[in-house]
Length: 514
Image (tube, helix red, strand yellow):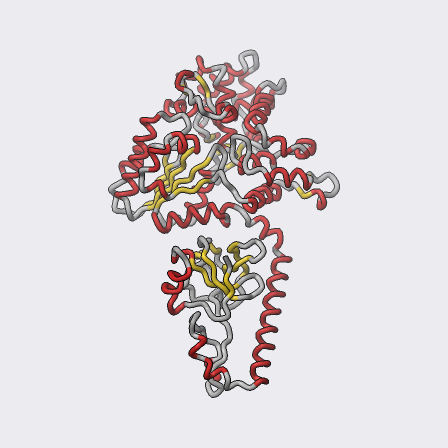
């Protein structure tokens, strides 16, 4: 709840004021709202970008940021309740002081200091008081106008900025990393676990990073005295059995307890988190976790707006000519969906924004109901096409998925690629499939894959990688099984009698029953 104060922020006794105001002193904020009023609130801190200041959005009833106006603006990211900031974001206000000492007209006072300054307040005459109010009013109007102008000029940028980095989930995860040196990112397929881990790592580049899906890797480094960032992505996976889950969870807990100067980010599928909840609940480390399945309306709107903008899909009222556009009612229906059926909202929206048929965009909200089935049908259409160009594109997708999700065209395993070609298309001229990949890769970049700075290719969405794996493997497992990496295979396929019976029907289509 926002509490308006007539006095100043209590910088001189912040700790005492924070403890008296909030159940947790770390939640205490003293700042201005979007119309310039000073006040305080108990809220989870957010990360503020350099060049911006925290502000309370009175309409949205939440913390937000606004452009910094002044000569000493922050140059780097900081938390919204950082009282040690000495820049222009610190809340100061003109106060009445002794008329014979004009050099002290701008000093900060404590929340309860006003009773000690009454004697000096009466020194000013009516004209002086009026003049001060006129000055304050003029400055306030100027700041509001400048803020409005900046918002008008950068409206597009601010809308696109409402992504995960400025979202509640990102803030929660960053807070856990700062306070506990640990965060577990929980979510269903396509909820953005790995994506958020990458974004968190961007702010921690000064630490040596160990990014692994093998528990043996981080176990060897547990007792290292160096400060490191451990990103344990896919050490837990949907087809994992109970014994493996318990073993890995214990290793993660040991890492948390022994490598106390390091930081740990671990991703956990929701299915594993719920099915083995007792395993995680008795571990101190996993108390610091963020659920990526529950996104606020603001976060969903921000994610959708970002992807539509990046893929040049306009709102219907702004569309013109042959430009792709999305109807208001369809956009609203997508935002109102708390999540896709079976896979995460971010992946659903990312796939929708890659649609290039206007009719598909008109029915984009329907995609949210059975996303895995629809992606699977599209991949199968590519596989079963009569066009050699489509067949070659599917062959490259299958090769990438069955090789672990990464494609380096300078080091293609021609023997395995030839095996795939003869297995998938036994009646075709396979030589045509085995060279000149560039045109096919360029076409695939529009929807399926992306090129890294290193020149290697990877899938844009991991859930699509899993679907391609299933489509390529399930009817050819007798040929391909012995040629796949065993660790990769166990994450995608399991004996029919060991297949998770409680797995969602749509999610189950991302895996193979042997």
